[in-house]
Image (cartoon, rainbow, N blue to C red; front, side, top):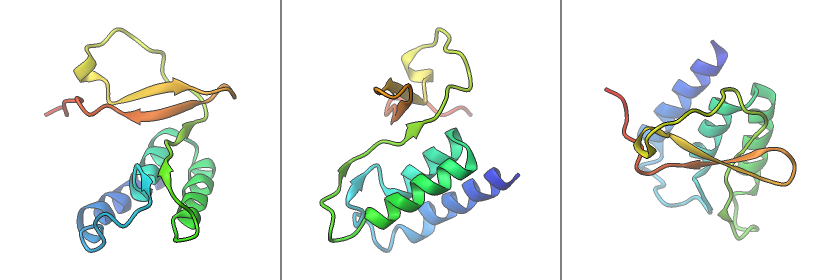
Length: 110
């Protein structure tokens, strides 16, 4: 329930408040997208921590760049799908965790 409320608040923020400062984030994906991916895929404590530290780094003292969120553990087992049905790609890193990368050819249901 808390996760769904936080995701709804992030959705509202992305729809209405990011229009004011469009393009002001120093990272890709933007800080709000990074937080949304974290809250969708990680535990609440991990998502809060990683989102908070990312927001602290998004200032003029850091150069920014590309930083994808890390997935702590796999919740579902992979199955055969078409490429257009995959929402995120999971790329393993050296610490038995996964980077979450958005699939731009994903077709939304409905």
